[in-house]
Image (cartoon, rainbow, N blue to C red):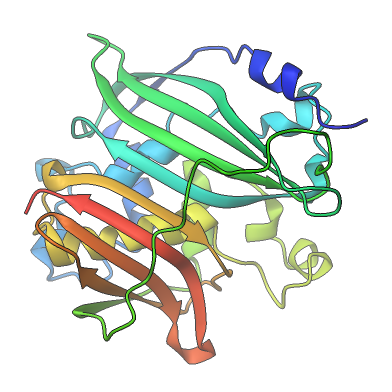
Amino acid sequence: MALDPGKLYALDFPEIRQRYSWRDSVVYALGLGFGLDPLDEGQLAFVDETKLKAVPTMANVLAYPGFWMRHLDTGIDWVKVVHGEQAMTMHQPLPPEGEIVGRTRIVDIVDKGPGKGALVYAEREIRNGADGVLLATLLQTVFCRGDGGFGGKSESPRRPHPTPDRAADLSIALPTHPQLALIYRLSGDLNPLHADPATAAKAGYERPILHGLATYGIAGHALMKALCGYEPGRFRAIDARFSAPVYPGETITTDIWREGEGQAAFRCRVADRDATVIANGRFTYDA
């Protein structure tokens, strides 16, 4: 069965209403490594319920519609899909607890050609459940490796943000610990690839890997630390491509290039393996 763009555009995702507590906010932050330095007051503000702030990238795990490609009649070969890119825009800081409403829709589909796959862009809006105020807009790019050649448009509406050809202005190294994926999965992504050694081996990995969105959240942590003084209200938008997996226990270094007031480019790498794990990053913030 071939990918059917008409069915994808017509998908009516159910509205998801989710209530979360301060404990959920703390578990998410712990799943990114916040609190590894027990004397860092900036980090502790995201794991101490007496003065709690919500990590902005937590929006990515709220009101998530699940692995919808597996369960809906879209023609997507779900076994071959990978998470290619993630972008998010914060309109208001997330409350550390409350109720939110999420709504997902397909906004674009790109046909890269037979044998080259397809790109499906899914947008999700997160609103405050109490007053309907828009909190965040998320854009997920799904690379459907087995679904090119259905006759759709070939040009992507998005271009990767270029990485500057000069030394980074600053670099932030954040360690992870071996249990990190086991904690992060408590925020909702229970894929055994991140917990079960046998599943990881079948996928070609030496051991379970860290969730891509955990790596993305660690990048957000580094950027908020370096450029926002740990103030979530200054965090505006982040956009990046996933390029390689991270193993829990590795140190992730985020290289940052300032590109004008409130603008920065970034990438994330694991220096010990000389691996770039997030590429073409772009960050917008209140300077």
